[in-house]
Amino acid sequence: MIGDDGGMGCYLHITRAFRDHESERFPILDEEVTAAVDAAPDLFTPPDAPRHPGFRYVMWKDSVHEEYLLFQRGQLDTKHPSDAFIRRMIELAGHFDAWVIGDDAEVYEWDGAQIVAGDRDREEFHRRQLVITRASMNGDAPIRWNEWTALAAAQPDFSSMSSVEVRLPSGLRWIECPPVHCWTGHPSGRPVPFFHDEDLIEVTDADEATERRMTELAAALQARVVEG
Image 1 (cartoon, rainbow, N blue to C red):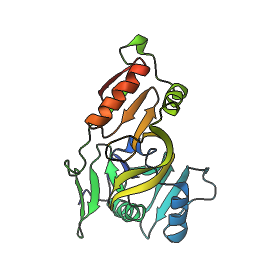
Image 2 (tube, helix red, strand yellow):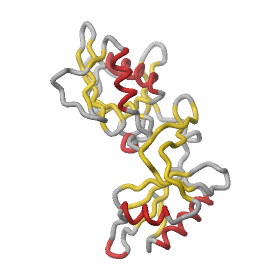
Image 3 (cartoon, one colour):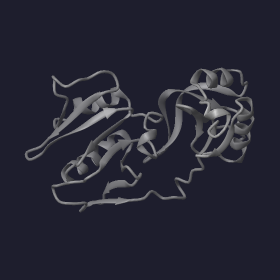
Image 4 (cartoon, rainbow, N blue to C red):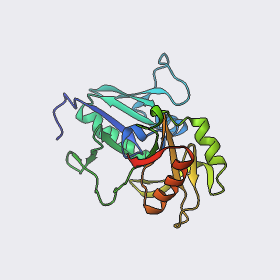
């Protein structure tokens, strides 16, 4: 077992992302959470708890425990969960085709007898993360959202998309996401999302063709491509 009923001393997350801070890019949707809570007799949202689209508390209660998840930024997370709650989180993650992960991206699973935590298969989840940035250049001038949107809109091989292909426990799958500019000219024919992240542009799995396209865009932004 992971521990006794004192539970974990860290945050755990139900997410469709490789790391929890990427959850907004590959979100669990508000309506999915609502449907799951409505269908489960042991889950509920307190009527006096704050709630708005994309944000809510999800309480879990059995004969012994009462614990909660906070749904925000496309994921559900909690701190110090008991072992019983971790197991319930694993069941709920299966409903969402998502993982239960820790802050270091380790995955928590139920092996039929106990909770186990381990790293993902590094070959299956091999990623080369590259970013377009002005860091250490031009006074560290940020790449603004409006600036990036204007450049992407001017590219004939870019489209704004509201769904992305992501690797989930069930395999590769298209899911809804916030609008993201995607390179549609990749030799594979698959759109490549270019995520704007505050002051830079990030591609989470960049091959040589993608790096070349990023370098062209970086020149237009007076920026450069570096390892993320």
